[in-house]
Image 1 (cartoon, one colour):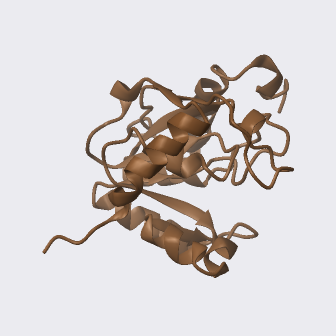
Image 2 (image 1 turned 90 degrees about the vertical axis):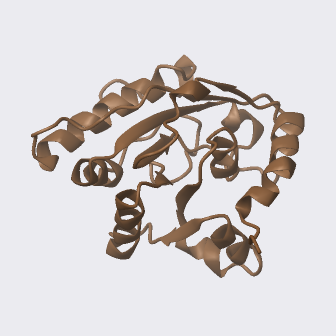
Length: 210
């Protein structure tokens, strides 16, 4: 007997995403169908993991704030949806090892390089973890730009308002071969951040020197 997985929710998420958020996708052909992959979107709403995975057509695991797993029912739901906990206040070697195991198995893992939702819509500084992991595991990074999410669901609102969200999947970026991770990771982060920022409106791009 085949067990039901997170895919049973896809029709409902698709209808909600298209009907309520008016979600449209660009660059779906850039999503690798197999092989180790880190999906790296900008982070604007709680709905980001569900919306970004809609067009993936492959299982996607994602890190989520560890405190979310303590919320009754919701914690069980996101675990069922392939989330695994991440301690955001300090380094979390357990989460990193879990992500590394998934990448070694050829899976896709979603990591938000900003480490949390943007407070004002502007792209925040990137943390280095995802890029070090990509270099160590030889995984490509898929930059993803979410446009319009902050306008629909800013952190100050308990519930989202109807809007129009565009999710752009850019061509994958691979770590430089033969370069030590401590050297390759910062350059990889710079490339990915520039790609993501290129599709954001000017007022949401990083400030000069940020």
